[in-house]
Image (cartoon, rainbow, N blue to C red; front, side, top):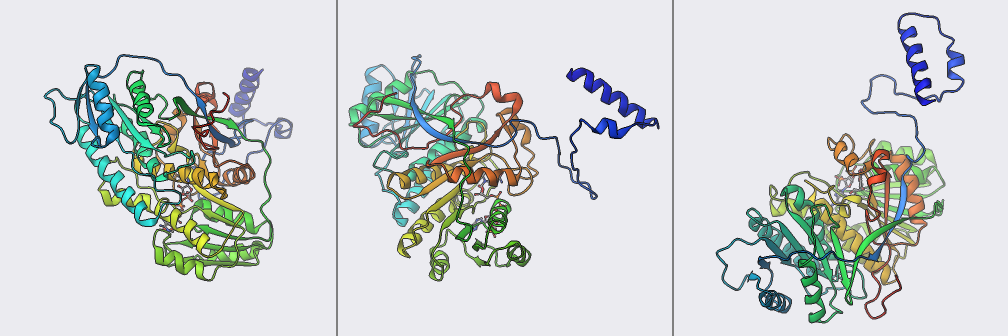
Length: 505
Ligand SMILES: NC(=O)c1ccc[n+]([C@@H]2O[C@H](COP(=O)([O-])OP(=O)(O)OC[C@H]3O[C@@H](n4cnc5c(N)ncnc54)[C@H](OP(=O)(O)O)[C@@H]3O)[C@@H](O)[C@H]2O)c1
């Protein structure tokens, strides 16, 4: 029937092109009208809406995932292996006949086939004190540079080992940064398979070494699950499930702070809120230029007050100044973020740190300021990205993926501590914001994602906010790729089960 209708429409089109008289009213009776832009022509597709093209809100969780045993490594280079874990792992592998080199030992003549980056540090708690956070961020970037220096060569496997990145009672969100970098490395080094392995300080050293040994003697294919967590001998991977489709109501007359509020998604959210009630909106961004037209628009749409405060959220003094005269907040939407495409190898440490700043330092400063100023908004949303969890999207965006991985881990830790943070990982948005007009749309599609409109993203955001989960995704599955999508595609909605009380599977 589809082919016949198509043939009929094509014949009608040809007739029309040749000047034939058509009864267009009859033709239109069964058709859907698609509004297209008037001049100047915008190069944007306006396809009819298909069922299933709306964004899906998915909550992320962890589930047990068995390993497939495989041949192990022959030569392993341990980076950051001078601590107890590095020594114990080195001993275990040496017993199995593997040649191991550590930072503090000599290097074997044979180049390593496997690189193990032991990034675990002392748990800093959530939120981490600012100086500890800065030191951890710097250390992650410095070690990344060491990894990049070691990667060319025969190395085909990279294991990035962290500790307490994902909330288990003891949380260290900055440990999620190496996981984010790891997502981009296979795209930068074709043939490399990389995996992040998160251990917990609640497990004994022997249990941690067992876990790493099992990972090293398992199949690690390029594109395989990018992050796993080991808790009490259980191996867990992320899994996602549809959230109930119940759009939540934010108080229509509430007071909301939107960082990045003059940007694509931030301003769309502000307009949405203004259109629903006499709310008060405070928008921030680094730019000193006040977005007068946007503010006028927000007032015209119904906001009882709308103002802009220039503040770099990664600057402690600026955040303090922002909070000094804030009214009691009902919600914080942290949409500030930057993206600067380029491989990790091609960027300087400073460039990487600039991409991390708004989401890493900025988030911690916001959380601290909320506490210090006695603000207890019911809603605290961090705008994250699907690139922090789905392998293959982070190529040329490794620092951006790391920044968002931090947000995801931070929200999980905060929620586990009873504070209402939520990280929402958006898929690409086509008509505004930092991904609009992106030349990599084909990469998204081959990875199973269709771009969505800003309005659709904001509508889905309301559903996400009404969902009791620390980590959610808002994406539109690409229709042709739906069947190929692994059920895992993403993140964490609840903390990993507590190690002392394994949950049923
Ligand atoms: N658009 C998408 O497809 C997409 C997909 C997934 C996730 N996201 C996330 O959604 C959020 C909003 O993205 P968008 O598309 O709306 O991007 P956008 O249009 O570039 O807006 C981001 C805003 O953040 C502000 N900003 C950047 N760094 C800041 C800082 N240190 N302090 C304060 N403000 C800062 C920028 O303003 P100034 O330059 O004036 O500071 C800008 O207006 C981002 O966090 C992004 O990662 C977007």
